[in-house]
Image 1 (cartoon, rainbow, N blue to C red):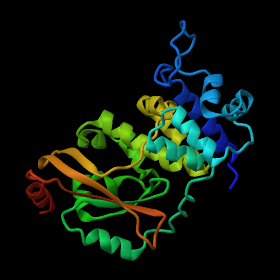
Image 2: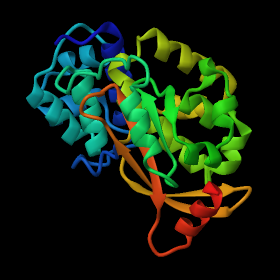
Image 3: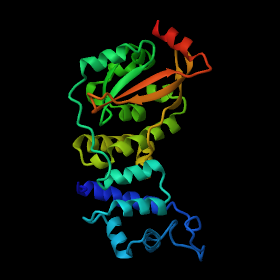
Image 4: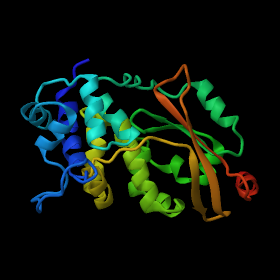
Amino acid sequence: MPATATARRELAEFLRSRRRQVDPRTAGLPAGGPRRTPGLRREEVALLSGVSHTWYTWLEQGRDIRPSRQVVDALARTLRMSPAEHEYVLRLTGYGGAAPAAADGMPAHVQRLLDALGPSPAYAITAGWTIAGWNRAYQRLYPGVAAVPAAERNLLWLVFTDPAVRDLLGDWATDSRRFLTQFRAEVGPRLADPEVVDLVARLEAASPHFRAGWASHDVDRFSSSERRFEHPQVGTLLLEHHQLTPADAPGLQLVVYTAAEGGDAADRLARLST
């Protein structure tokens, strides 16, 4: 599937940003004299990846060319990409999986699944991170979710603009950056979608922290791990963060928080639910 103009432009900017982060010495190149700009030169990336300097320059210019899978893999090795970054480039060049179809509302059976999770806070988001549904435990963890106008009920928007979410997240600076990098990794091939364009524009205008993070082009994949919340009623909550996709609703992602082992989070969640 040929890459769109938006995907080619994103690929070009992403390659430039990664190239500037590679220390020439780690790539096996002599240190030489001082460089005007940090990182590798284009001709060095081309040489190390087995392509011509002109062709790689075209790639960084966003021209309408499609690299082979082997070239994408070689660029990922040369630019020391993480697995998440490699996967991101594969999706931008058309070698990743197709983007999930937009969710058509919140299926009743998915809402029943969220409700059945009892004291474990859980919610569902669309491919554009709009919050489509949640259970009672999540509303007690974050009471503002029901009060937010539906047009603003986007997870990324709330993370960067709602003071209540900033207070709730145990380490807002780190957590918000994690959300941003995961969002970009998911929507990279769909950056031209009107929903994504509008959200990014509003966030760049509303949040300098978002604006700086977005300009970095950093991406990361989701991983289940422990999250810390500071709740005004029950204090510190250490929860494990999980993400699931229903087989019959691939346009939705379910986010579930369960009590972390070895602490009193289960008791605190029970108190919160009552």
